[in-house]
Length: 168
Image 1 (cartoon, one colour):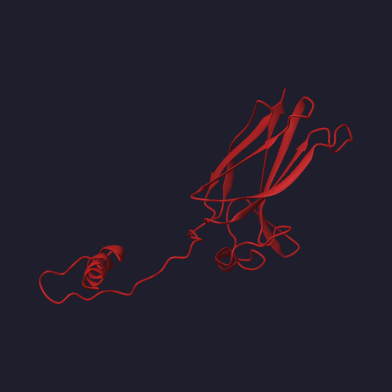
Image 2: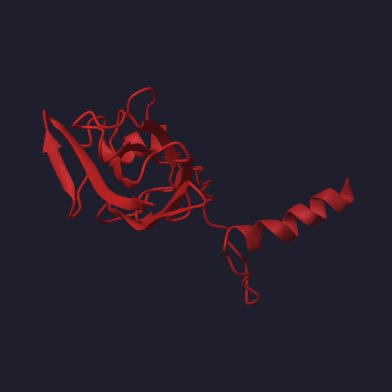
């Protein structure tokens, strides 16, 4: 029991970022426990850094200032989808983590053309909801969401980014 108490006393000042006061009585400040979802201050934004197809696999990599755990919805469709030439279409969600995101999907059966990529950040993505800390930071409908790509439609704020990759 003495070992555990000694480790706790030695660990507490280091983990709280406090330095020991060797010239008198040391007062420990309050301890803050960070949640898993870390919301940055300032504008919310993200970009597609690269979208490439290699060996029939689309790989999308991006970065930005969204908080860890934020969900980004993706929609990928073949450029012939809208005019009925080809029905290649896929949707899903990816998690933003440490300033970046990535996802891959097979386009093995897709004909030559382009894969059109649309990524959206919204507070209530279809089929899921953002983590509580993200909703708290940006509001239930994104009312506190600000940034260069923020758009408002029907009382909801979102960020949408598009890109494409050639299928050869």
